[in-house]
Each structure stands twice: as structure tokens, then as C-alpha cells.
Length: 194
Image (cartoon, rainbow, N blue to C red; front, side, top):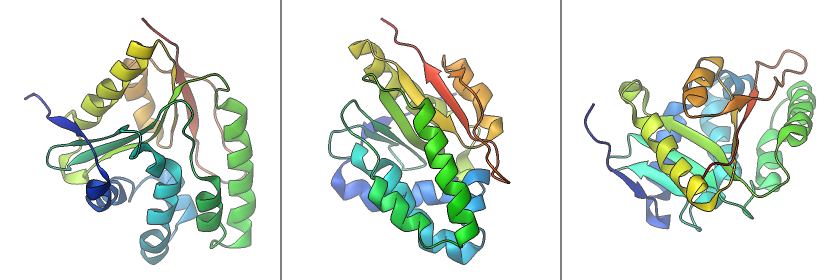
């Protein structure tokens, strides 16, 4: 595999970055549970993804490949997802989905570390470029920051096929979040190194 050129995303890159994630998550089981139709997905996912990881851009913790084929949103210590933006996106869904997703959010909070850590809110590649190591390169890039600071990293794998990828990078499965008919969401922690 050729070396992957990665750079820190800026505010000017916001639209291109989130368009990459829109493509990457178009078949994600957990996301599509919430946004079941193409129209609902196209309307709701941009606000949801911005709420999940948009806070990564300002502190310089959003990373992209040089051609925007892949992107990662890492939230460093002290930066959190925008709960109000996420709630607003979920609030547009049918009540039955809102109730299940409320349980998902509650259970996510039970696994999310309380000590300082880096949170990989989202990572994804253009489906036409998946399997080329772009996601792994972005994960490694963020983990170097974690290791430089001696901090753990945390994520939730929203697709079971991705858990082995994260395990190869040192993440360990903490459990499974799956209330009601929600697909499995796997919280994973990579202990501090360095």
C-alpha cells in the first residue's frame, strides 16, 4: 500500500469532510436504523454527524486524506459531542425510534470514559475507496496524539464488521449496546500507552 497523505482539516474543509462521511455512513446499520429512507438519511445525517464530531475541527483534531477520500473526527480531552444538535436530529424521527435511541444514548453514557481521553467520534471512507487502508491510516494518526499525551482512546463501533479493525489498533470491546430492535453498537476502549 502506498503511503497515505493525511492533513488536519480546517473550517474551510468542513463541507467536503462531511460529504465524505455522508457517503461512508450511507450503509451503516446504526445510522440507517435512525434514518431509514434515503430522504431521511440525506436530511438528518448531516446535522447528526456535525453534532457527533463537528467539535473536532476547531482544536485541530479532524483529519482527512489529501483527496478527502476518508475523514476522521477525534474529540480531544475537554471537547464533547454537541448533545443538543444530536437531540434535535433525533427529535425529527418517529417517536418509537426516539425512545430506542434515547436508551442507546443513555447506555453510551455508561461506557464513555470519565477520565481524560480521545474520542473517535467518526471515521469513514468513500465506499469506492474502502479497503485501501485509509481508515487505518487515520486511526493511527489520531492514536499517535493519544500516545504522545499518554491518554486512552474510546469509540463506539456502529458496524460489527469494523470491530476487528479497531482491535488491530489496540481497542478492546467493553460490551454491546442493543436496546429494542437497535443494531449492535460496540463500545471499545484503547488503554493509555506511552
